Image 1 (spheres, rainbow, N blue to C red):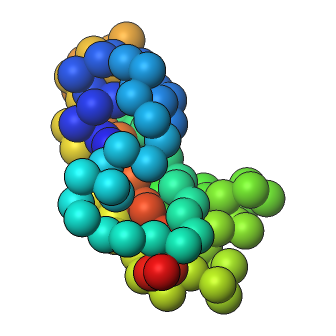
Image 2: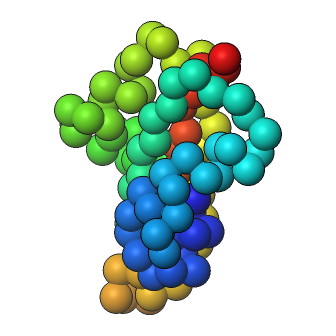
Length: 100
């Protein structure tokens, strides 16, 4: 997802109009429930801890992190040059899901 955000220069769960579940479906994961958190910051100035702390301060993001129905999580950063209009940005994505 982060690479899609970077290539489209669009901070969105649906960059370039892609379906929000496109990446998880492309992985072959057959999910029953799905959630996603995104975070954008300046490259080199944001740690994984900063990202998680920001998500925990946001009610909808916190709900995903703490949702006991999710059994699996994948998280990854992606470099996104120019996304925030000032040099390099970083986009963190966390995908939460439970299998069928």
